[in-house]
Length: 402
Ligand SMILES: *Cc1c(COP(=O)(O)O)cnc(C)c1O
Image (tube, rainbow, N blue to C red):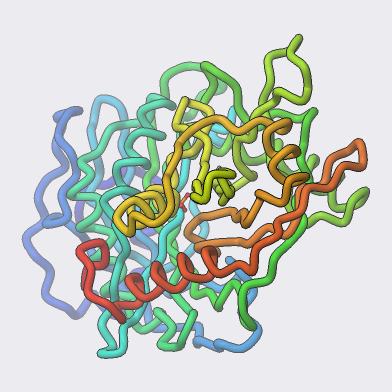
């Protein structure tokens, strides 16, 4: 029996008798007492459960179905990391005082695994998600980890539950790495216990019958992030507060999503700049009035989440060289004037879940509506190019076989 922290030990014993008790186990390495030593994928402990679920691809609602297993590893101050573990999917015991429950001391990632035509499982730029998770965790002073080892553990987990990656067009296995503080104290202080985990959920296509443009509410009151804040980090505290503005806008304007803006408190509201949606970056395709087109997206100035999809679209568009790429502020005034002149060609949100979400119009509380005038061909093309890479229909260094 490996010496693991109590919470994990309970998980181990509660699943005794499962498949792997018969399997040969590698010699357990003792838990390091060195705070600074990272956990290693080579030390992974497997406790595999017989499959309980089955994969029904019809009617898959996002994030409701989970695979058989999960990855966990826990850091305790003064002890270091436990052995990393792939065990049955189950509840995680947390102390009632755990800071994650009180102070939102948590962060997460969203990534996907895809199956290609040859049946191989692929990941898309996974090292970017590991780097972002490490940065988010660091912003919360959670225990640091080695990104390469974390990625190796994630891949090992993916191999265990590979049968859960849907083998169907547009489907994928959504992977949710996350980290949170499980300290046994109410003190608002540096975490003494960090849990790091990965769970996975099969998902269907975001757009079962083609891209559907939506109206977006331009929120000029609620701020998602602000200079000096944590908008650039995927920390839980950025998301809970976005639900109320979204529900309010849906009720009043029938808009399924909100785009946030930012302005200094005494600035002219027309000078407020676009930031991003609750969980998507936002991009605008403008006619520059001089025969050219410009793809505009807010710069990474600390209030914007550095999306992997955002970066990928900017890189591919720069490489194609047909459209100028500008990471710059875009004010409500500029968008209003562009739309009025028929120069707002297309707009879209972008993120791992949907790749791109076309935007038909921007709706303001004062009744202004700014409409896109294009046929959506740029957005469609981005969608196709990225999904071709992700599903391995074209070979590209961003897509790696696991
Ligand atoms: C996750 C997220 C995105 C999209 O990031 P991807 O890496 O492209 O999935 C954009 N904005 C916010 C606020 C997010 O949380």
